[in-house]
Length: 265
Image (cartoon, rainbow, N blue to C red; front, side):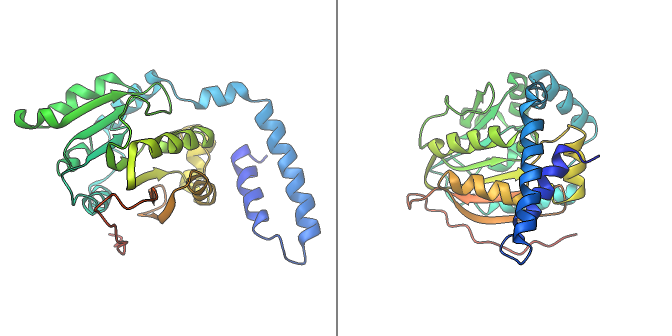
């Protein structure tokens, strides 16, 4: 039996075939899948609430990853290479959403202030311990209830980053975050976010077992563009390590990102 994630994925693939000689047949099949999808979604409010992970869930997940990190050294270096391409101005601030155990938190030292947003207040102490005393004044921690950055000053950052956080969000929650991030970014500011792309089996399996939530490159691109951003790069380091880089319109940001070829180790 197809899971709801597989139904959504099949529907997306069929939509891409519209306009061919099979259009009538495909339209009928897409409508059937849409009806099934809507019926499943409508009757699974409890499931949506379950997929909306709790602070206790994130705390347990952080502990497991502290004992056994899911990001190996090769992938960590690849992500850092991207981050460092945005570290060309110390007059603006950075924001990391969902720093967790602080795997990348030290990589934002080039910014004036390093802001961190998490659902867990207990992430602050261990991350602060990573930095020397003289750097503490540059660290600012914020707490979010769910999918908003309302306590972060408007137009305060030229770079927003998140890894190993957005794959856990529903598409609805992802779009809510994208909407609020735009308020935080200066004109021309960039955002780099990891997301789940269920066109790949590892992402799909994580979604089917309820660990991640369903998303695809097509849907992520749509949400980014609907919020008024310019898509700069939709790429991956490997399956399960997909990322989107996008930019808020405007020219205030002195940093210009240039896409580099990714070397797979």
